[in-house]
Length: 415
Image 1: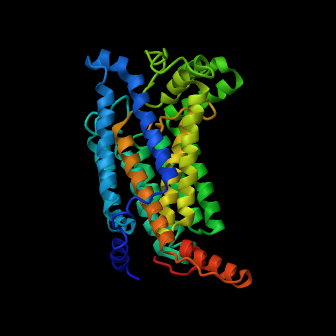
Image 2: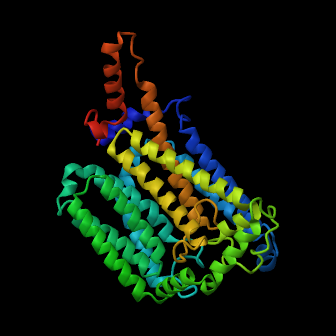
Image 3: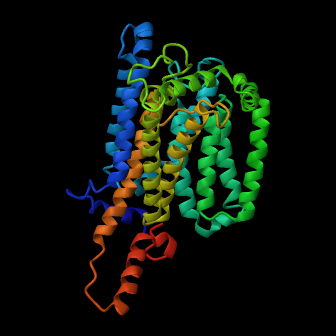
């Protein structure tokens, strides 16, 4: 069945009463993280807003505006069947690569890095996270078993991911490049890549990562500082020490929302990369665990959406977005707790940053779109008539398996 036919068929399903049949646990996790994010951004920036802009709500209003933009864009995307996004995956990748190249050539250097346009307000690398997932999901779903061949699988995959990550490394932004590479590697693996190819990609990726860490001064300094901190906590970097102070001050219950003291100039980047430390100080261990629990809920329901998706494209989309948000949250929390070396990765939905928030919301809208498709498909499955157990159970199981996992069983494939 052609893509156009699928889109027309699916558009008939999106009638009133059915368009809001999302995975409500997934929606709850998203809404909870979004609400926490707005609260914590205001708490972490009201003093900074007073000092820098003479307005305590300055940064909060910027974050809220970015959130509204993301929600509007997400609502628009929800009006289409998710297969419609395939039509823009190639164009989106070309535009993103052009923005990354333009940033390197004409972008303004801030603290020695070119990561954003318009005084750092708009970061193309955030767009690259989502666009790369959209393109790879389209690419692997169109290859089928040919992805095991070097000329159809490993070679074009390596070139694509290498170009995107290379342009981001040159900013330099090694942590974002590694995140995109990790998500892409996961999709390539789940799509059925050959084990030998996976081994080659893993070795090459490890060698390149070691070279970049050694070549980039700021990355090598962070590795050295992290190793010293493992031997002696007193040798940890300033930011890690202040993050530990914040977490220690919070204890079990926290000092109270808005009452934390580390954000008043002690903890660097408290409203962006270090906001989880602010959460730990003001909401305590219980508040931190609540946010981690919401991320776990989001990842669980996202993986479930990928498993129940009715075709490979939907499964790859859901898996890619889930891994992106899950990996990024895991890295941020691991950095704050000194489990891994320091990186400048924001906490999705929680950290201050308009580009990160808006793109993360758009990604969640796409994930909710796939989950809606799954629920609509389940509602279309006819209820079986009563029959003897010996005759009925196997037929019902086979029918539901064909409806839920055609990309695995081969029945009803829409790619």
